[in-house]
Length: 404
Image (cartoon, helix red, strand yellow):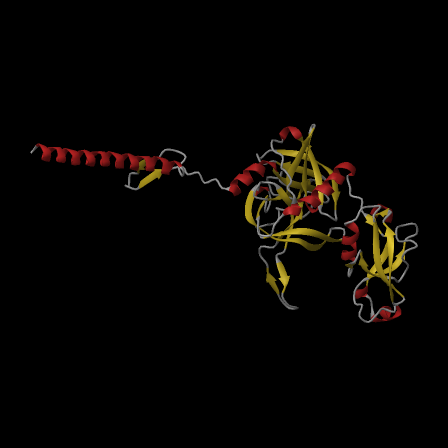
């Protein structure tokens, strides 16, 4: 009998210890399991209609939101004011009277990013086409405050401009990343003011779609511009221009500049295009910024020639040039400016086909080849003269300023 009682008590003790251990395990799992997903305690309440709601705050921070948080306060809206006309918007008129001549009105809006504070001034970069023709520039900060901006310098070819503002209002400065180390497929995040300040600091996410794309456009002065660009599928809209494209570390890898919205599918129709935006690589922008801060402009080398595209010439002119039958594209030298780089090296009616071994088929190709060099560099030019191919080395001793 005593043995039976001992066995029974032993079994009950085992069951009791197991129950207590299991209960403690469940409580521990609930406590630590919830702590990884919930930042605040859970409170359950009940509404009058019997619907139960749970007041839970989750930690939904991601690497993307952390990257955005790092730079967002350095992103600004850039407002271009010009003397009003029928197409300008006067923000000060409560009656909607936008046609009062002589008054400054909003001619355009874009984005920018603050990259430096120095003394009493802070500097931001934006696109030249955002501030082109501005008689007054205002900068709207991320906190909603607006300050006056002063143009430090602009470069039409790179579409990069620098604007200076009062440093006392700046709390965050963005950091540039190394755009030469980008990989196709990595995260790309655009921040800016699509459609203007109403949507300031909008964030869109995509990837780096491609590198080293050549994007050709026309400047307001009619100059053909060919720029090296990062392609991204992050959503970009008018007003994003000049804003930063950042990586997952929150570093600026590019300055958003343009997008393709449609493309000719045939001679009689066009197709809508989505997800093809472009940004000026950070390393290219930094090099331009340094010159703009120092000189207010960018000095670029020039050959010192007047030129024409071979493909645009008439059959009669081509025959007179004695062009080889298999040569269909190149740059024809119309004249050479005395005392400039090409003087004594090239002459009228030479046809330039290569620079440093790179094929030259259009004026934009020639421009890109020259503008990738510095004043004082030497280039090797391949050309045809009287139907025969020749080469010559030319020192780029002249600048675009000399062409004036």
